[in-house]
Image (cartoon, rainbow, N blue to C red):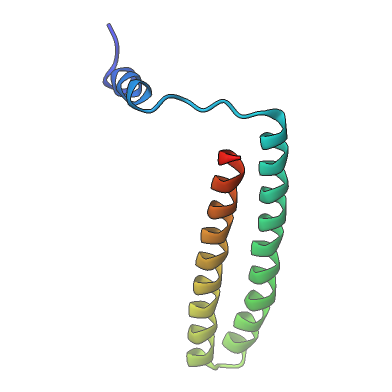
Length: 91
């Protein structure tokens, strides 16, 4: 007897067949992942240190502004990351 999860996965597979990626696509996706992980880490490090300094100095408003900037930057990076990955998968 199949579980609800197995049945749902079968229905999903029948509606949207699994894409097979070529080795070139896998390589490109790995390169994209590496580049964007580095971008995320760089932004978190840069703004994270500024946020910590602002908090240590008692500048709560500045820290909140920097945290909002970090969230906005990370959201933009992740959107760009997914767009590039979709293009690589489609090629």
